Image (tube, helix red, strand yellow):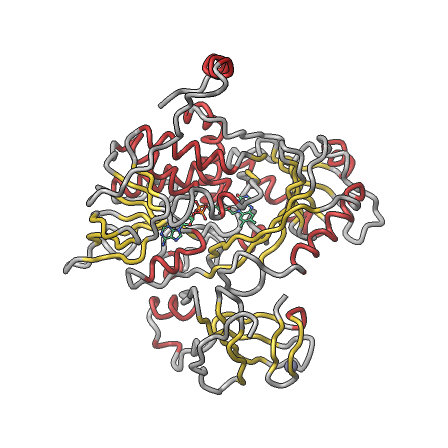
Length: 98
Length: 417
Ligand SMILES: Cc1cc2nc3c(=O)[nH]c(=O)nc-3n(C[C@H](O)[C@H](O)[C@H](O)COP(=O)(O)OP(=O)(O)OC[C@H]3O[C@@H](n4cnc5c(N)ncnc54)[C@H](O)[C@@H]3O)c2cc1C
Ligand SMILES: [Zn+2]
């Protein structure tokens, strides 16, 4: 089970959280102007990287707030968690055990 | 290829089983092939077999980054069924089921397909309605499926607890008698051996690291850990790693990769006659011919390539198993593992051409593609050979997400084993 560092509450077990998918996918400013391809990209296309992934989590059984995290999808080690609105930190993930 | 028969087995037994050939050759990669399959799981090896067998493409290769069947093919709980709700899915999965029925003979390899029956439990009023809808939709599509009362379900599977006092009591079940299991490794090995006999090069420990495209954008070659190999056609059948491989051609797909876990118990004498699935309490169970209980758990919530997953996921499944089958409460579990499954937004696969000429993709099988192995391989080979989809995989395009033509089995079944 992951140990997740909520930027508001601190480290808590994964069971307190809900996963929210890839982060930094901006909602279209002018939805009516979007083509079908742009809609499909927004709704369905995902980076799904083997490596560093920016993702949303929500501390549902805690403060209830959404936040973002950067995690390595091979080791599952978190490099950082940060508040919504803050830029994605360009941190390299820590090695397991650090 | 040495053929297997009762006579050849007896003859070799007298010779101390010396003199059996390797199932397939271990060739060096050639400089060029007419087509290349990326991924040596059941779907990729099957695709190569049908390309050679039915379409006459024999100068082809399967490139596998590790060992054959070491991906999800060798990690899955081998449940086979075709009782999907929508016409498109029922047609695809039943095409596969019909091929399973004759596969051991066609490959001269015992894939141990065992139609012992798959029983899917209903625990709530909603489950009952949805299950009955499946039964009727399946029957309209010529797919066998029947509704059982709790007593009939217990008669079919005596270990089942149908006490009304359960937290999630069994209110009935849908039974597909043609459903069952097969031997996962044998499927990979049987296709590999038969493809090899038709001239297909099967190359293990060869990871594809790049897709080379010409000026017109069409595929020209692949880069691998064993050098560049030229080819005009590449079929990507890389399951959990599909996004990684397709990114080499500059494509993003509607896929996310999650760990899916399974576990097996210590082996015991035959106690469990069929396959039982419960989507509501999340438990999948059968007994292998070795005697182990084979138990499927759920996916972890987050994207990962770790092939591990959290322990709370299988623990949750064991809660459900112990309640449904109290006699298993004292069984010890032997092994637990994960595989990386590639899931689409509608939980249906993509078996299609791509916008890149010469590049084809067969992916998105998620938690439930083992059952489809022969059918998927068969129609994908057709698609690659003719540069056009077979009528059966026609609806399973990439464009369906743009056009809103989803095949939404997620809503239909909640889980897609
Ligand atoms: C725990 C678990 C339980 C499951 N239970 C069931 C079930 O009961 N019933 C069912 O129908 N389905 C089940 N599934 C799903 C099923 O296993 C898969 O859908 C199916 O086996 C996929 O087969 P495949 O050949 O496409 O993929 P795989 O067998 O994963 O093969 C893909 C191959 O591609 C290779 N590869 C990846 N990248 C590269 C590269 N760059 N170069 C070369 N090779 C590469 C991989 O090493 C791998 O061997 C389960 C899956 C898991 C993990
Ligand atoms: Zn919090």
